[in-house]
Length: 405
Ligand SMILES: C[S@@+](CC[C@H](N)C(=O)[O-])C[C@H]1O[C@@H](n2cnc3c(N)ncnc32)[C@H](O)[C@@H]1O
Image (tube, rainbow, N blue to C red; front, side):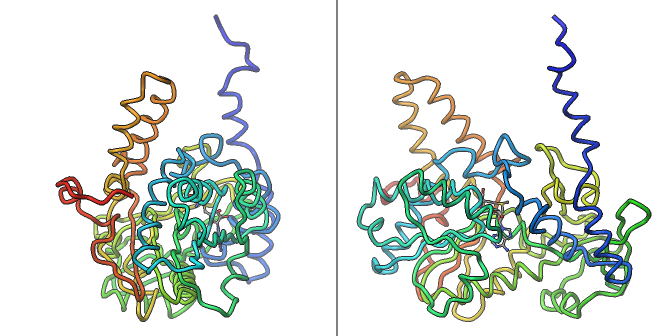
């Protein structure tokens, strides 16, 4: 039977392509006011964070399958349950402090924090009693979502704008954990041409936004590459995440003792700036599809890039120790994904549909061509980092004698 045209999903796809972005005139005005160009970092800050039309700031942002991209906490709460085991171990390694701050910057829908707290409440009540959950975001509409999600599960968290939390004077003891937070912060774009490092600016040509190169807007861009002792390949484009490094430095400075666990798409700088990577890693997403032009629909597409973990770790500053990166697949496996699947399989006869959903979730979270290749950067200050559970090599974790969380 032929579907009537109104029911035909493709009709909506055409609408997606032609929907005009209300931010375009705002950005064109900003460009004109700035004398004809703005940095890509300014463009990205507006596209994602303009108070009315920004991608992350607008009301009714749809998460997960319904939205433009799917993050791990939206796939299944088991992601948060497994990371809660790591949080529990951190609490124990810190000597079971009370209060114990569990801080999540860029808390999205609130799903990650909610699932971590659910696991702690059910499996580690002493830690749960000590925990002070702090959900941070850059946008009031997202904070409202997070408050609603956590409230629906009976949790009371400290909800704050990141800037406000950073301005508080008292450093805290605990764990700062984030998932796909740093990859949503604005980046500068650069291109190397021989010995010249040029910045890519956003400028307007008629109704369209285009990139144009010029001298870097700040010496900090060249200083970043000098500090790394690396440059993009000749002719290559790359992202420079000055803002992510600054945010990491300020967040880390608020932790007196504890751990920072950063879960994000990214690489060490040497891999990120490998000579074969000519186009950088910047991507625009809409309805789970990469979009060809990141400038085309500001506010309607998500913009993201792969973080430079070398610079992020260095930014944490004095007293912070960092471990080599591990992958999400490895971390979740040693945190108990494999055992959880064995348990799920053993009770699969009770509810086959539930088992199928759990299996699908486990595969999605650990798929090395998707979410599984996300990296984990673990850092510690005045706390032991060696042997942290999420960092254990798979062969040691499965050699027997592993602790149960
Ligand atoms: C890619 S989403 C990830 C959300 C969530 N962590 C998850 O994994 O589903 C990025 C999150 O960072 C938030 N964000 C963007 N800029 C921010 C800022 N300056 N401070 C705190 N959060 C920010 C967004 O509103 C959004 O909640």
